Length: 128
Length: 318
Image (cartoon, rainbow over all chains, first blue to last red):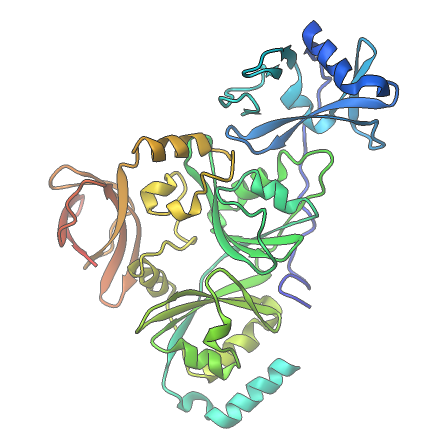
């Protein structure tokens, strides 16, 4: 036994998340950049865009290229042969997102414009 | 079973209540939230004002979660248990803490949040010689450290403050052991104290217990900048904290004052028109000990007069 074993602790607290059909816009520059990032693995790999707690403004954007996950609960968006996945849990936070890419040495890279964000931090990685 | 054996032995040797009181024990009401899972630490670290990424097992730490304006939303005490992190906090903050912790969990991370209200009791052991009581339990002061929990059967114990003539220790006890441990402490010379006095005593020692509601305040204004780590990276409110710190925007401070009546919590003005705010007023003997937020530039002379609906009240510096 330990301090937290035994009776008294609840089952994990469940959260009810609203789910909407996600629409996102990917600019031509961003399409090229995503294709370049996935490279030859375009048939097996996908881009997952998600939001996680943290950052200066409450939520952080996250983008990863991974082998298509087995987990359920993703919405699929096809853009020029590239598969983009967004999880149902993030759908209300990311619906309407515009993904852009800026090719510059200072402040270059992917940029998000999120209509659901009341504010964003200076670096653009966090929103709330 | 071992615990019962120690109780029996103590009764036999000490003659129970014959020992004069060496310290007080008091239970401070606490809410308990458990964050578990292999990604629990990362998840917390993205939100807390302190860095927990390298904490080891049994680390004792305090932290805030702030809103986007840098104001305190929750104030919690940590018990690091590896993949499980126990957070103890004021009950009034339970809803917002649990809601914050359960939102924004990434699709590929394993994190669970559970309530443990009532499962763990928190007691303070304080007075002139609490070390003698702890020694009776077989716990040496040398084993105890401020930033670390030490196991005592299924319970945990740590140091809050050690002064020459006064010490404060903190113990977390699972409810199944609570009566046995408190009996053991009483057998060893502890007497039951009062919650008000214990919190007042912490205020006198320059500490703000998490049982005091500090929500809505900026950590710097409470003198709790040690709970803000501006080098750890982004967390909600970090931009505001960094700007305040770098531009000298910390305009308030906190001090402890004594009155002979209980002060009403909230904002008030001194007779010199200075903006003041009382966040805690606790009885301590015949006096009341108050935590007062005041402009930094205010002259902290021995007395401040405050206008209240009850009339002018004099606060004396502690």
